[in-house]
Length: 309
Image 1 (cartoon, rainbow, N blue to C red):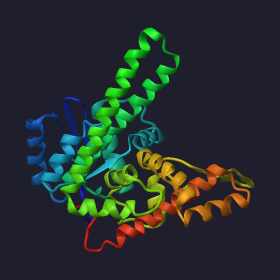
Image 2: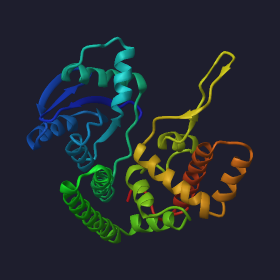
Image 3: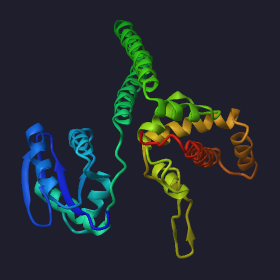
């Protein structure tokens, strides 16, 4: 896609605001509105729909675009807001947001995102729900520590119910993968690395579909484990990791902890860093990077099994 025709879409709960270089219009976010938008896009030459993540409201639009084989680019809302501030745009309405999205796409020359396959999308949905249940269990356990006898029984019942739901959800994920030979093979390849469990493998396949298509530096930055310089003149501050995909980073952190104990490659690597005086967390982050790059190489070796199955 050399010179895409950018189509900015600001997504609301009930409406879509569309902005192009030549026109602007509004439609509903329901099936009728999506059909209207797709009818317009089919008349455009090389359209690239640009929208921001909205916590789930974007899903019907992205699914419709993927089904119609129309390219799209999903952008980080924080990055878009920072661009608006840098442009001196302080007001915020749906129409203004659509214009900002269009300017951002034109300035940054955005490229299409890698679309999730239906199997990957369902896996991501199941993992989202799994995360909800895990967070709920953690909150209830914290409440139980301070609960009175009158409420402790109810909290324990809630924890037991959520744990049963979590087990049922894990079985549903395994069943889903068993019906997808390509995803199943990739999951087995990832789990074969000591320190990487089922949840980490599922998370990488669902939330990091670009893993086999990116360079190493791009990959670690996208996952949020790349240390960035914070230097100015003669001041050299400590490098820090920031940004990236938090869901992937959290799983990698736990996997690196396990690998630092059991993995025959990661364990001496971490011990060597600690022997040189590196703080434990710095060593673990370095192990996360090394582990992620190794996982990427294993998936790339599956030459007969493309990632976006």
